[in-house]
Image (tube, rainbow, N blue to C red):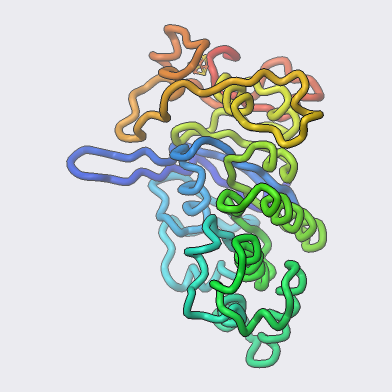
Length: 324
Ligand code: SF4
């Protein structure tokens, strides 16, 4: 597999006060192939968005490297780096309400990236914006309107147009559907799926609705308390989870398609996700895991290929002492 984006051992810690360290992301490695969609899932507080921002330079990395098409990206971005990579790597943000400037028209919002990062000017920018509004299911004359005149789903389409008008090669979708109604979520996911096929996009799709992630993703990566716990093909992970956390996360996820509900065991996760401050050694899921063993509290499990992989589970990696 030739990776478009290769994140290796990416770590992001935030220092807060004396000797306190929020371990938001620890040693996370993911390689994403051209035109691949990788879904990144986990509870709120698992570090998914921080990881997405760290690979785009919106957070400085504490450790690790990110390579984009063979080029190592800076550890810490300066203004020239943003200018350099904005055309090629973009982000679609979670909240379609706060991510659009209410004082700018839709045309100004969608065209801003072109004004800053392309040679297009005046009419060319207007034409490109009009074209993109139509591509995302809006109308060209919406350019003159303001964000408050649109519904949540329409605003997210504006956010999609803003990110894709530059025709980037890689996009991080940071929970692009979580603020939307279920019916609108499906529309936005279908739109991204269509655009992926027509533009050959490579995407990291961050979300906590696992059924939507399964639908849209080629592979799925599961994150818990800053670490990756399972990676594999989306259907394998969703229908045959190996890690106890993935199993419980999927069991607790309402499945909109009743046909695929058959045979699934409904579960719920015990307690709250622990604090990411000064995390002790051992498995991070030990305090909530129904299968915990003594070794789990002493040794940190590493993400390793599943032993005895079958064709079904090819490429599956799991971080759990049940498989070591
Ligand atoms: Fe559970 Fe142990 Fe596996 Fe962690 S390593 S998920 S505690 S069985």
